[in-house]
Length: 501
Length: 132
Image (cartoon, rainbow over all chains, first blue to last red; front, top):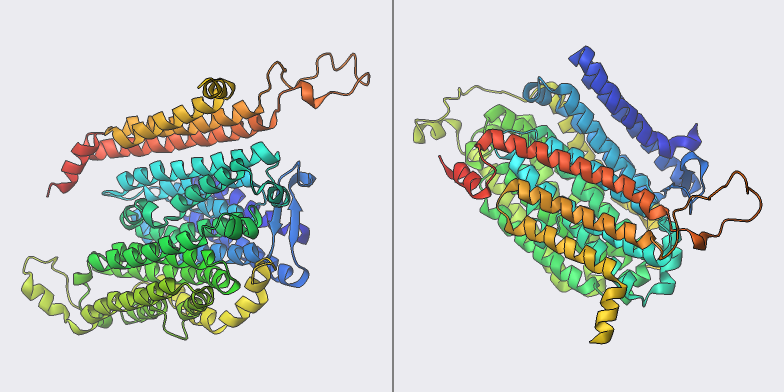
């Protein structure tokens, strides 16, 4: 049984996805418990797998018993067992929190909604475990297609934004596929471990160099790295709230994981950092991403849109940290994948709760919210502090590693960009806190007599089933911060190849 | 000049796929109609599929099926050199499924957009969005 954990993580939700669809035809009420059970199952399996990897090291799994160069192999090491736990846990928490929102928004499509939801999570989990370069492409497309469908389920501009995301995302995936084709052309293999053995002989091959550039360009599109980020803010901010709080924490982060995986374990660090020498330009692009993402966030008065621009900046953190090319920077980038998934989940769930109560996502409509929704706002403050980078929340520690890495690499521009972005995040969140704390609710109606006619009452908290996951996520931000040192020394340090200092 | 031409002719399969990618990209960037963009996207995907199919092919070789395998089984081993490589072709079966699925989702979204705005022209949709 335990030998099959790498496969179980995926099979449980995959089977459940179709059971949910069938069960929902019988009775709609079956859909949610089944979905929750499936994601709980894969979360628990992922945690067991992480513990197993920490005890015995890398776990390999051959699909249908075919050994690697011929068959598809799953390879679970310290890096992806950690990401597996994050993906399944975030999806599970979000599923619990958004039950009432989903029931309200998609009352007639609950079965299809949860089927797509679980299929998206299955795709992401499988991206993380797979050890085959072509398999990775198929799974990236499975995750992306379910993502387009979910994002397009919203009202208003959601379908149009989703279609634009589909255009750009498909080009990104096709570029990745083309890069893999080039690699296959010269190496004759698609297994990642096998590729990593054969690529070093071909460092001077122009085909491998083209494969590297094309793959990286495709992945940069998929993760929304700055000049290629145009699809991200529209797609995420127009999406239904329960979907954006699933997609925003996970999809870009998993694609950054794919970049780390492909660069370190397919093209090998020596090729990525020393032969290609694109570390420096990538860090500069990351600086541009961080600065422009932060300023774009400053320019909008809509809550969700502001948060999506913060994601653009955060992608810059992780990509920049990775391309610093030293142990501190890469540790910071991997730690930030985890922390940013938790922070983004927390802040998007809180935003979903606020929007569900106030009916508007304009920052100016947030007056008096500290009185109206004290717990939700407290969680929002904690998430905000974590994104700004205040200790002991987790955001501080990953930023600390990134800044230490920047100093060690002599990239002072990157350090300055991180500090500037922290300052801008401070402005962004305290602007909201100020409106929500100091501006009384009544004034809003006095200024705008044609307002929505909302009634002021003492406390109108979000429903309990949303509050519990929110508070749990906020607690998680502290826990991740307090145990950041352990996470780095016990897991992340072992995930990075020994050659990198 | 002659070497350039012979180079071109020897690797015409790559030029075909490059041309197709360019056509697809052009349609996605320059066309204002959403369905034309979707078709452009599909051309890009097809180009990559054709690239894979062409790298598996060998001149003058046959499909990887052992002729009269039953009668002559055991008489001589099959030589890999005599057959085209089936692996890229098998991979592309999956990629074709992916591209059909993408096309389906894209067209479904286009239908949803058409119901919402009554048009598939990007400029007209932009006008509708900006209307109060």
